[in-house]
Amino acid sequence: MTEFQQILDRYLDIRLVQIVISGARKKEGPSRIKIRPVLIKDTLMFQSTQTVGPKEFHANHGKAEILQLAEQWMSESFRQMQLESEKGNVNVLVSKKGKFTIKEKKNPQGMQQSCCQDEARRKEELSQNRKKRYILEEGRPVDFLIDLGVMTKEGRIVHARYDKFRQINRFLEFVEDILPKLARDREITILDFGCGKSYLTFAMYYYLHELQQYDVRIIGLDLKEDVIETCSRLAEKYGYEKLRFYQGDIASYEGVNQVDMVVTLYACDTATDFALAKAVSWGASVILSVPCCQHELNGQITSEVMAPVFQYGVLKERIAALMTDGLRAQMLELAGYDTQILEFIDMEHTPKNLLIRAVYTGKKKENEGKLRACLDAFSLHPTLESLLFEGGIKE
Image (cartoon, rainbow, N blue to C red):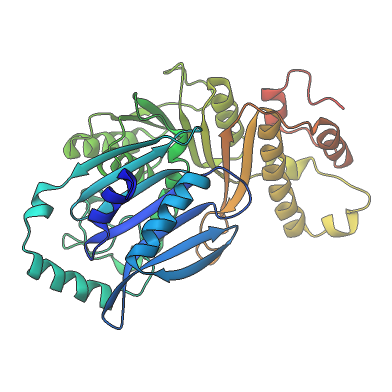
């Protein structure tokens, strides 16, 4: 066995929680693979879930097979692996030259637990738990979720807050995907514009610092003084030393010179544009943005061809909102980002369900001509264009 397989072999048992393989090297094929233990007719197997575009493909494997597949996936297709077990955590990075860097953090308490009792408990959990496995799981109390009213002290999800619980976990899946873009050998800075009550801000800090052991500093920024006071008090209560909240405006914030990741969730109308422009000016490696209230282009958009459709106000408003986010994504491509627009949460829970995920590559997409033609065709002058491109986008 290789060193990678030897370490993996120690954790491939019933006490494994999950393995996440991410950081795909190619656009073709799966973007992420999750592995978790399952009981099939009282036999322990390992189920792989490959995410390909919007679809998921499941397969069950024995231990020997998953050992070989995991090394093959890491050697050929992915850059990072995070393993979570009751016995400890393992993080694996693979360089461009194929060198494996493995960091293992054992859990002494988990190692000392009674094997027989623990195996019986885990078998019961696996036999009962056929539902989706979340990054933050029900049954494991998390302080900030309790104080924010999402979870009870016993770890049960408050029924009326289940949508919020799913939203938090969905957001952490997006964060999980971009982990290979975040440095592990230094402090990383994340700035959350318009953090509000900060469900997701606390979730990011807990996930990155407590679960993944990143040296992370997170700054939450919002205009509401009472919200900032409450969040600051909670961060101090939990001992989150590098989580800070400040009152301020997105456009004028100058508190940092360099940021690794910028998050902007439900910043209203052009506030999203100012946040995106700030992220680009800082050279942020990652941008995660869920836009809100895209009103600006609704007052500008015109088209003789589309006039029969635009006479219906609700349709014009929705088309303008989709155009806003599509143009934002294209402008980020022009600024050197590989950009995707993804579904954040099901439409049945909120209509504001699109997330723009941008990862800096430095390769600027040569789409100026087509983008300019699109803007001209609908008489559009978006704020982000003026913020990113002096003199506007050229033909």
